[in-house]
Amino acid sequence: MVVEFEDGDGNLVGLNLHQSSSSPTPEAWISMQQSWGAEWKLNSVSALKAPLFFKLISDSRKTVVAKNVIPSRWQPGATYRSVVNFKA
Image (cartoon, rainbow, N blue to C red; front, side):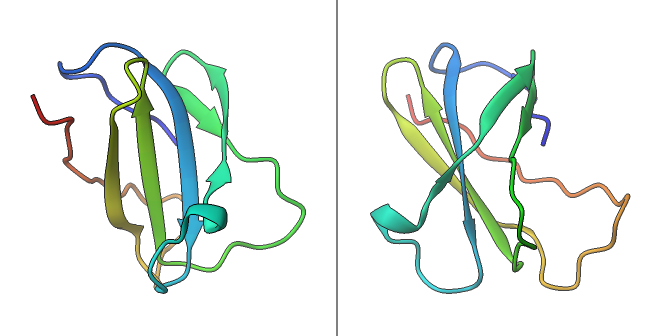
C-alpha cells in the first residue's frame, strides 16, 4: 500500500485495514506497519477477503476512512485509487 501525501493534517502515523463488506467495528481493524516512506505493509499468514477498507491516522489523531479501495473482484498487479483527505 502506498499513501500519497497531498496536504492536510500533518504526518501519517497509522494505517489500518478492514476486510470484507461488513461494517467496520473498532476491533475488526488490522494495524499495518510502515515499511519505508509512503509504503505500508501487512504481515499476514492468511489470505485477505476483499473488499478492503483503509483507515488513515494522522499525528494529531484525526482519522479518515477510504471505503472499498480494493474491490471484491481485484486483480494482482492492478492499481486501485481512493481520493480521501482529512477534514480541515
